[in-house]
Image 1: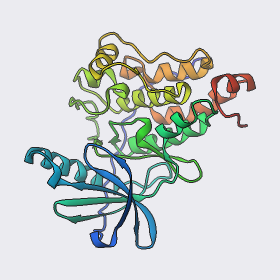
Image 2: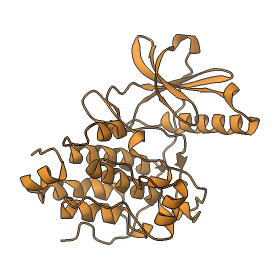
Image 3: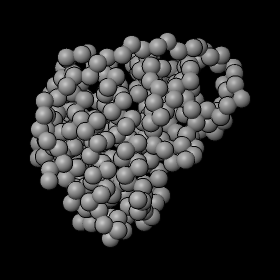
Image 4: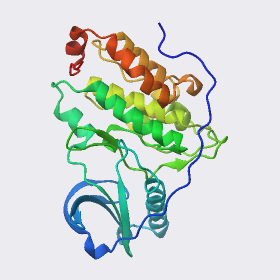
Length: 303
């Protein structure tokens, strides 16, 4: 029985963003660095008696004014998007602070760290594949229902709380889709190993590019590795966009999980399911697995 029937896609309705409160930078007490990226560093911090994560961008370190302007624009975009979101599988935004040239976004602190770190640390230990997949799909379904494309979904942008719940983070490359105009984006955004072929080719793309990225994260949960490991970014881009290559699924992958992943990273974006359909089909996929399937695939067995 096929996982997904063919049906006409439905446009998501837009939602208005809510304004966020401005925090006093001096009240955000920075601790140790817990992450870093192109735009800045994330610190373990305390604010208002609460353990938080503070993403700090220092524009004085930018080599050119154009780069500083780009980083500030990215930070403002992340604030605008994150401040309007409230969902159990989205990292909660708490507020922003500025003391130019330093700017800060404050989020709930995620004690479990990144999904990528969990995957690499438990290379031989079983992972709760279906819980993690459902958490991510629920969060992404919420984003798309609110007309937000993430555009950089990967395991390092999925964080875990103390109970192991997965939450989507990092909205610096996200954008808000206009109703009825979800396929007019052509800029190359994201990370090559997780990037959909239409994005690599600078073709118009839609929220289905996020579904492709989700498939690669599912692959990571099974392979416990980095997609296209050992290849240069350009080699990866050519393999995906021109040769329709995908990371090789482990031979122990259960058939229905393989079918789900292959649907999600289909070369044709219109044939990829949306996240609401993925949420519905995950329990069915789980039911098709035997205890042996769970064990062989390195998936934690749960009823």
